[in-house]
Each structure stands twice: as structure tokens, then as C-alpha cells.
Image (cartoon, rainbow, N blue to C red; front, side):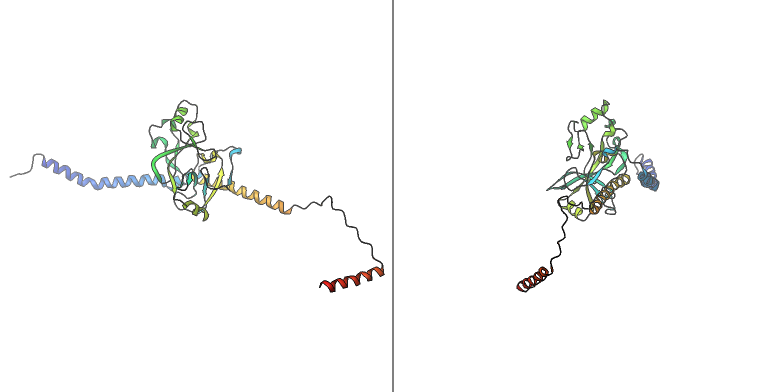
Length: 288
């Protein structure tokens, strides 16, 4: 007597088919994952990213110098060579906040393989704009950097000329054609340090704090070319300071105008010379 419910045979057949297909599905998924990673991280792609040209910056804005001011919003941190082996490698970080609660900033030269619309389909005004990895902290949101303080809702990041926020107003400007989408830079997530942590890293020479132009911070370039470019500017600064110091060291002292030549004393008569010797001998004996 057959006790199976109607359709049980078909269901069993379907379940058997699914069970047999699961290994194939897993293999396809694994293949897709490795295929995606291979395309994103292949040596060819990595070489292309490293060889990407740096955006042309006007000479008047192509500058960077070591900062002698206390760490504050607007400071840019340049990673020292070989200091890190993760996303901080060859990194440039814009400090957004710094205080008793710690430090928050964003990487500005770690371009991701995605565009703004991949992260938010509603931002059609910024179609084609790259997204930069800001760090591994914070909510899954994007921050917008620019140098347009008149954008409503924008806040200055220190006094270096870079602004943060004002997305709604920026969308309107771009959609009306009054501003270009390339004038805005988008970063995903942030980098954060606990109180005192960044100061310790600075003391260990893992970072070089610098001041630089907004054009370099907002540059649409790749990680290594941007990092190399800023380090080259810092080397130029050091070389100029060394040349100036060398010129100051070797500059001959000019003779003083009011220094009159000393007149040679006329030779004393023999009797006067003998008296002087006798007097000098007496003084020596007294004050010895």
C-alpha cells in the first residue's frame, strides 16, 4: 500500500535535483567570487592604477610643506614609507576632527573600483565620479568634500580651504549646470583613532603632518601617484631649506664701516722700554 501523499514523488524528484545541483551552485559562486577578485586585484589592474596620471594642478596650487602647527582639523597626514601594510600604506589622510575624544579623518587617495551611482542610485548628478575609501570606521555612508563654502550646508574643515557636506545644494548646482560634478570628491566611511593614539603614531614617525592646497586634497588621482607627488614636494622643500642654510653659512662677513685701522705704536726709546719691562715685572709679581 502506497502511503505517500499525492505529488510526493514529484517533490522527492525535485529535492533530489536540488541536492545534486547544490555543489554546482557552490562552485559557480566560488568562481564568481574569485573572478571578481581577480579582476579587481590582478597585477595588470594594480599596475594600471599605479601608473594612472596625476591630475594637472596649477603651479600656484601645487605646493605642500611640513606643518609646524598643532594637530587640528584640516591637517593632512602623509604615511611614512613602509609604515603600514594595509589601506594606510602610502596613504594621505585629511583630519576632520581632533580633540579629547580622539581623532577622525578620511583617506583622500585610496580610489575604489566603484562610482557614486554604484553606492547610491539616486545621485545621478554625480554619474561617473569615483568613490574613495575613507577608512574602515563609521556608518555605511559617503561624505562629500569640496572647496565651495557658498554651498548651503557645507562646513569648513579647519582653515585649509576644504569643506565638508552640503549634498542637497550641490546636487541642485550640478543638475542646473552651474557647477561641475568633478568639483566634488566622495569618500566612503572614515578613519578613527582613540584619544592619544594618533599622537603616539606621530611620535613614532609613522606620519608626517603637512599643510597643502585644497587642489591636492581634492585631486582625482590614484594612491601611489598622489603620495609620490606630495612626497616629492616635501623633498623640494627640504632641499630648498638646506640650500638656504648652506648659503647663510658661507656668506662672508662684510667689514664694519666704522672700524678704523689700528695705528702701529712707535717704538719706545731704549730707556722707556727698560722702564716698561721693569714695571710689567712688578705688576706680574703683585697679581700672580
